[in-house]
Image 1: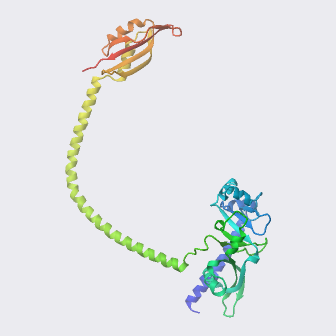
Image 2: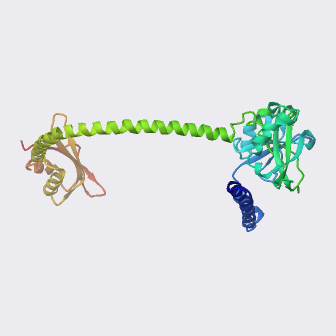
Image 3: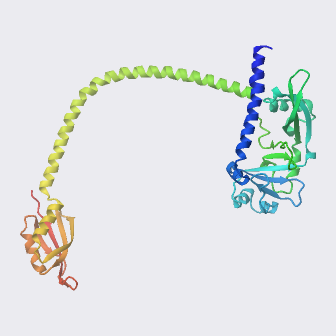
Length: 379
């Protein structure tokens, strides 16, 4: 036995089989730690199945989340015909995208092939079954759906290679259209087709894709070759791009060196211009502040002018239409008639006048007044 055959036997045979058995044992032991209800909750990915079991009367569709989880009542064809499948599923809290529509047919509807195959061909078995479908059966691949299950180990052949038992299940496509008659579904709605399988069977039935089966993708070797070609083109494009990028970087470095001198020369001029601008702005701000008193200075002057028997309840600073600013003062005083004269004697106010009649306030026990005075400008 050559070294290559020994490595293949070790890594693709014994080691792979031992790893698969170890994973199955660990998975079973881990799941055994949880109760069935908790395990169903943890493994739930939100996907539901809408089952149409051909042969049941009356015709009904059962929405299930897992095995032995079948809520009542079932979905009737009249309910779908009255609205739509999406609306019926939405009323039950699920979406069409998260729901697989599965048609269960009796076993008699399927043609079953049973044969032995080398265990080494297990990885390529789906592709091999597709290739041999037309060669060893009377069916054409475009007219049927097919799936397979591993029935068990068949032992070693005379050559010493281990064998596996394979069951290939084949279904004619025209039977799907007959199966959905009277259910308000169409063949385009069906996602999977599978044989009816009694509970307790050790081997699960094969589920055959309906919507994706007509557009089989390229085989693994084709995908690898296509990926390699795409990778080669990508690397070539990246290499060309890197070469152009380096050339542009060198040109940019030369242009940057040329522009650096003019940038440094212009920097001093910009600093000088900015300093001159800041100086003019500062002088303007000082001039405006000297020309017009601040609000704090106005409030301090009002507090100084008002006598002890008067106080302000509201003070507003407004701009006059003809230019300048004025204050509007509302408050209470023992004698409000003398207030305009007090404001006119101030260095900040002029043309003070009462803007509303003086009225006695029954709560304050004083006279209520409204006064307006113009603010003197210092220019």
